[in-house]
Image (cartoon, rainbow, N blue to C red; front, top):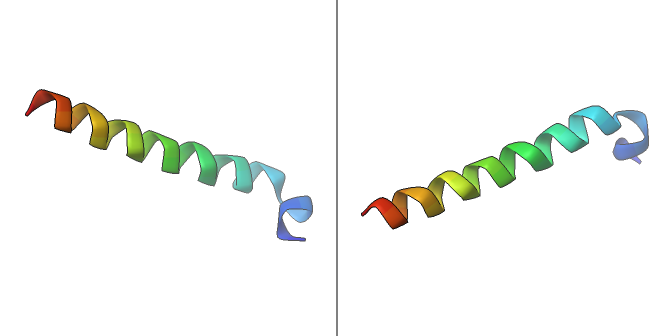
Length: 31
């Protein structure tokens, strides 16, 4: 239900989590 009320924040949350995962993978590759 929260998604329908605020889809922008929901999309931002997904993007933020994906960005965090990418940063973790990049850091692992650099090591």
